[in-house]
Image (cartoon, rainbow, N blue to C red):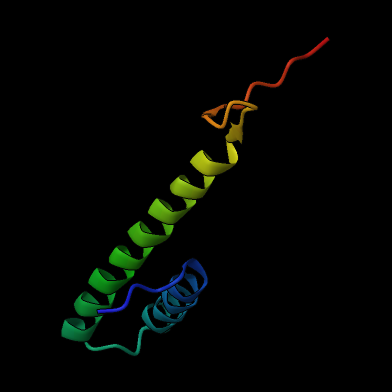
Length: 73
Protein backbone atom coordinates (compact mmCIF):
# COMPACT_ATOMS: atom_id res chain seq x y z
CA UNK A 1 0.00 0.00 0.00
CA UNK A 2 1.34 3.43 -0.97
CA UNK A 3 1.32 5.93 1.88
CA UNK A 4 -0.72 9.06 1.20
CA UNK A 5 0.71 12.52 1.50
CA UNK A 6 -0.62 14.79 4.25
CA UNK A 7 -2.76 16.64 1.74
CA UNK A 8 -4.21 13.43 0.28
CA UNK A 9 -4.96 12.08 3.75
CA UNK A 10 -6.63 15.33 4.79
CA UNK A 11 -8.78 15.42 1.66
CA UNK A 12 -9.85 11.79 2.17
CA UNK A 13 -10.62 12.54 5.81
CA UNK A 14 -12.76 15.54 4.86
CA UNK A 15 -14.70 13.43 2.36
CA UNK A 16 -15.32 10.70 4.93
CA UNK A 17 -16.51 13.24 7.50
CA UNK A 18 -18.96 14.72 4.98
CA UNK A 19 -20.32 11.25 4.22
CA UNK A 20 -20.71 10.41 7.90
CA UNK A 21 -22.32 13.77 8.68
CA UNK A 22 -24.88 13.26 5.92
CA UNK A 23 -26.51 10.50 7.93
CA UNK A 24 -27.15 8.54 4.74
CA UNK A 25 -24.65 5.77 5.51
CA UNK A 26 -25.63 2.29 6.63
CA UNK A 27 -24.39 1.36 10.10
CA UNK A 28 -21.81 -1.17 8.90
CA UNK A 29 -20.48 1.30 6.31
CA UNK A 30 -20.43 4.06 8.93
CA UNK A 31 -18.31 1.91 11.24
CA UNK A 32 -15.86 1.14 8.42
CA UNK A 33 -15.71 4.80 7.35
CA UNK A 34 -15.21 5.90 10.96
CA UNK A 35 -12.35 3.41 11.37
CA UNK A 36 -10.75 4.65 8.15
CA UNK A 37 -11.24 8.27 9.23
CA UNK A 38 -9.51 7.62 12.56
CA UNK A 39 -6.53 6.03 10.77
CA UNK A 40 -6.32 9.02 8.42
CA UNK A 41 -6.54 11.44 11.36
CA UNK A 42 -3.68 9.61 13.08
CA UNK A 43 -1.64 9.70 9.87
CA UNK A 44 -2.22 13.46 9.57
CA UNK A 45 -1.34 14.01 13.23
CA UNK A 46 1.85 11.97 12.91
CA UNK A 47 2.91 13.90 9.82
CA UNK A 48 2.19 17.24 11.52
CA UNK A 49 4.18 16.21 14.59
CA UNK A 50 7.11 15.15 12.41
CA UNK A 51 6.96 18.43 10.48
CA UNK A 52 6.81 20.41 13.73
CA UNK A 53 9.91 18.62 15.00
CA UNK A 54 11.77 19.42 11.78
CA UNK A 55 10.72 23.07 11.88
CA UNK A 56 11.85 23.34 15.50
CA UNK A 57 15.35 22.21 14.57
CA UNK A 58 17.97 24.35 12.93
CA UNK A 59 21.14 23.26 11.22
CA UNK A 60 24.04 24.49 13.33
CA UNK A 61 27.34 25.59 11.85
CA UNK A 62 28.93 22.25 12.78
CA UNK A 63 26.31 20.35 10.77
CA UNK A 64 24.40 18.96 13.74
CA UNK A 65 20.67 19.41 14.19
CA UNK A 66 19.95 21.29 17.39
CA UNK A 67 16.80 22.61 19.00
CA UNK A 68 15.94 26.09 17.83
CA UNK A 69 16.02 28.56 20.70
CA UNK A 70 14.62 32.06 20.31
CA UNK A 71 16.64 34.51 22.33
CA UNK A 72 14.74 37.51 23.54
CA UNK A 73 16.56 40.73 24.44
